Length: 421
Image (cartoon, rainbow, N blue to C red; front, side, top):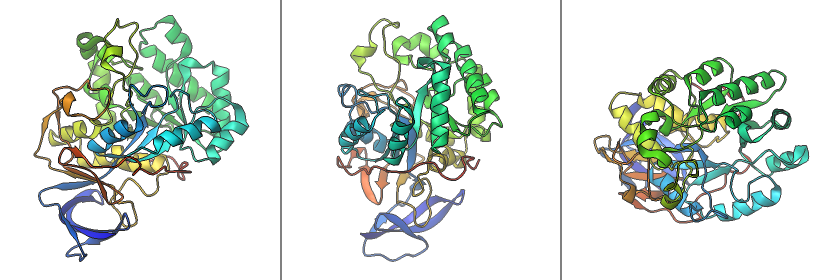
């Protein structure tokens, strides 16, 4: 299949340029002016960005299909401009063995978008080696609050020995046991611990959902990649007080000072990745006493739209957003055909009208959870989304077919984990 995208304004080589795109066999075949093809797609008035990569989602399914499944979760991703996801292992059953990986791959075949799968770290060297050879993207998130330090060290050693990346959920076990509200010290102690362990290990570390100023300060200059979520950028303790269980997640929301420091980190390149930690629960499950409510919020569909609205407000540059949401995830997790508008890359493209800002409404979203912590906030949703040249979302209507997404088997980490800032 070959067609040309005409009248496009594309984000190319760190700036917006007016070019045509020739799409051939699902990839970008040529970038230039007045390109010829048998058919065309008009992008007049729209900005074209590379498809987003959300490296931290929980699409549930299997034993928790009432919360989300791969079709609804991936449809939400496509509607928000995310064309590739990496799913984490804490499902029912958890992705910790070859058998459980096989089971997850069976249900993931319904995905609308391309996907990688992370595996858990229990089971010893032979098990992790086999999972790595079978194509998992990375290991974790490794929940430090669920494991003893000795177990964490052994897991990191194995992951390092096989050349994989360890994704860390940085909350200290003892600190959480001391205070179930998970104050800042939980994250700080965990980061201090894992940095000490790393001194004698060769493992590549990626810290998930960073939430505190001190945590980010500890990680500066350590050659450890790190991510931040929209809920830690847009929400704070004040929202928790108002929304209660619906704003409960781990790590929890922090104060305005921490939030401001995270914003500075995404602007100056200290933070490498934007990821949603999409963790849906039903309204009924959340509508209970806060101590009994499950932790987590949906976010894969609203992540890029919220950030595009921030670009419009000059809170962050378009270049930084593309780096955080596309370029860096592709580099860090070895997705070599993703993350940029370049010849030879997959034609994963977001068509955006930067003037079309609107309020987020839960009844317009596609996750099975049917609610959002960002209700009423301004966002810019894509007009159209392409995955490998095929339309998976257009004009507010999901177009992707179940099973269109590909498993990105054997992605592995790329050479070097230091992303471009």
